[in-house]
Image (cartoon, rainbow, N blue to C red; front, side, top):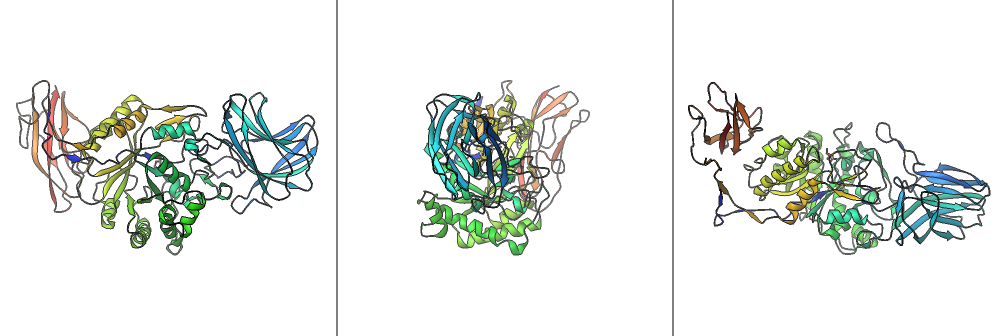
Length: 617
Ligand code: AHR
């Protein structure tokens, strides 16, 4: 039986507990949440040794029909602008029914009957080009579903746009630009968007995927990564200023998960999405130390100014008045009202090295000085197993940050056995942000382990402020990381069992947790039959509890597993938790005595209660 006393003072549960973490991994942005249907729209794909194997003509093919002869090449001598340097040069040397180019989207362009699609393209004719250019959506067998005509092609870069409404549905359409003319055309930024985006935003999000995220009722959105936020090397770092403004002027970047980022889904769109789903924006900014897993590079101290300014300017972009430089840019993009950003996350699971600490401090101190209203969230590195006192946790406490981001991708058993991980967590100082976690698969057992772990999270809901499963999205056939919360293809969105766990805790979050007393069905009350310090001698069928186990601050205090002694199995009921080199519990079948070891580190003493129960043998 279970008893609880509601007159006791309970523990408040964070009302911001369940959120989402969006990273452009598994084609989550381009080809995913970002609704653009054209792949490689500005011919900016390229290869990066060891990371990306794609070329600037990827997803494009040449059209030569009815006797036409043409050639296409990538050029960069007369670019659209300095950020968008490559374009396609189409040279038609013999007229026919049509010569042009065709894009196959992300494994086909899905088109729905009666839906409207907004297209746009930049074209510049070289010399006299009098023939019109025809824009077509075609189905897989070449049938034309919709078309439009562009007249009077200019000899300077000009944007042409229109709306196409399809007569029928296709799963694998193509988008074609062609002409009967003869001569040379330069083409760039070819775009096709469904009119029906999430909340009807221009340059918007794929409605079905965004809605499935919205149905989680996430209380916050952590973005844009993950590893991509600090990038593989300085050149690859995600700099938010490159992701705002006119999409044709955003400098694209390659993606360390093996493809490219158009940055069409950039910081403005992330903030707007947060607003649309009522989620707190938690942007992650790089601190001048790039990914430790990928030949880490470190920005020289004298070059840190742009990183510091990026943090300060982000506050202005998100919250500043329209009379400020960055507030005005936000207004130009259509959002004069502030986005009300409260937090900035600095860094993503960097190693605890002095170079990181000093750079983090430079940015955090500037934020404190110029924007004391902004709460900084730190990082605890990659390892989930460190104590909440050492390494970057200790540093974060010194820095007095609002919360610290912990990541762990673990076996389901780890989640079950570490349910009590935060029970002894200090109730003052930075809160916990579990900014990435998952048990390593998406079978039912993983979902159950996550659900079970979240009971411990809720129990500690006074100190765990935010949690988010990771990664969030995966495009079928483009998976770089398993498991993922939501999978999709061009027309379907599939929720995992893990998704439903997140949704359960998000939608039915409690406000307060209360202590529970329980008695087992076999009549054994774990709160009785208490043995101090030693158990088991002559009394096999019982439970035992050690009171007042003293451990010192800095100790690692866990019990990983239930443990066996010969045929006997002892189950840990609660309290403390194992670590190999900290406190641990040992037993032996022959001499059933239990010992607790600890290695003292400093003088603070904490009291734990450890309960064990023999369950068989
Ligand atoms: O979620 C996938 C990756 O795991 C993230 O990019 C990174 O932060 C972590 O190592």
